[in-house]
Structures are given as structure tokens and as C-alpha cells.
Image (tube, rainbow, N blue to C red; front, side, top):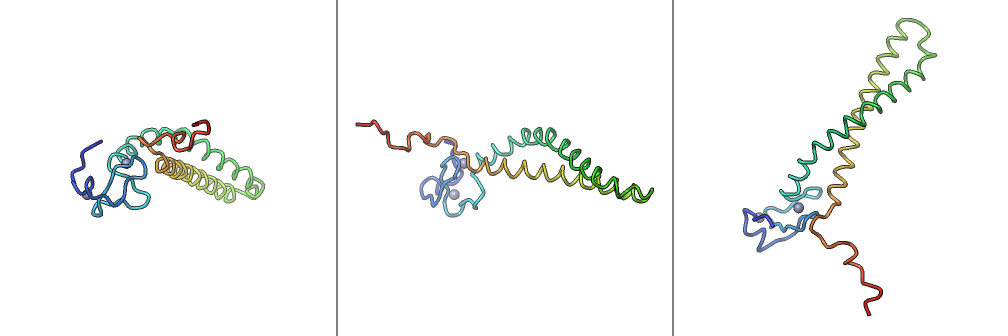
Amino acid sequence: MVASPCSDCMMRPVMCCGRCNSTRCKLHALLPGDRCDRCERDWRDEAVTRRAAKVIFAPPIAILAGGLLFGLLLPVSLGGAIGAAVMCALACMTAVSAGAGACRLIDRSARAMFLRERGGDLPPARLLPSPRHR
Ligand SMILES: [Zn+2]
Ligand SMILES: [Zn+2]
């Protein structure tokens, strides 16, 4: 266990980190959705992995969304050069926002997983009464 800079966190805790059970005093109580310093450091360490996931997932999604819109608007754009230019701009915009949306989705689901994770906790099997205990 990492020594806390505040003795109240150890001696007079009002809550504990939902991920690793390290205790926090009233002054250092964590906000909902926040985790203790050590867990937040884990979260930052995982940023590299998340960035890699974005690099893998965002471009195909952007291309797919842009391409889909391109195909949908193709009949409309046959009207001329202006139509084609508008369609291209729309397709590009869609691609960019789809890529950004994919990145946000990765962030959000990764955060949800991080908050649910409980390191150093009892394994779930231990929490259940053993059926053949007696
Ligand atoms: Zn404290
Ligand atoms: Zn923690």
C-alpha cells in the first residue's frame, strides 16, 4: 500500500477508492467517477494503449462513414461541379466527425472499464458462499 501524504486518509477515512480500496479522508474524498492517485496514474499510463486503439479504429470508421455518405449523395451531386464540391465537403466533414466520435467512444468505454475494475479486491468467487462448504 502506498503511504498517503495525509494521515487522516489512513486513520479517519470517510470513503475508499472504488477500484483499489485505498481509503480517503473527508478532505481528500474522491468525486464520483474519480479514483485515487495511484489508480489515476494507472489510467494515465493506459493512455498509450488507448491512443493505439484510436489509431487502429478511427481511420476505418472515418473512411466508412465518409464513403457511405459519398455513395448516398452521389446521385444528388450529378447536378454539377458545385454539387460535387458540396458533397465532397460533406463527406469529409462526416468522416472527421465519425473519427472523432470513435475516439470519444473509445475514451468513454475505457473509462467505464477502468472505474469498474477492482484491483487488489477479493476475487468474486470468494464473495459467494461455497455450496459444498459442509
Ligand atoms: Zn486525507
Ligand atoms: Zn484506487
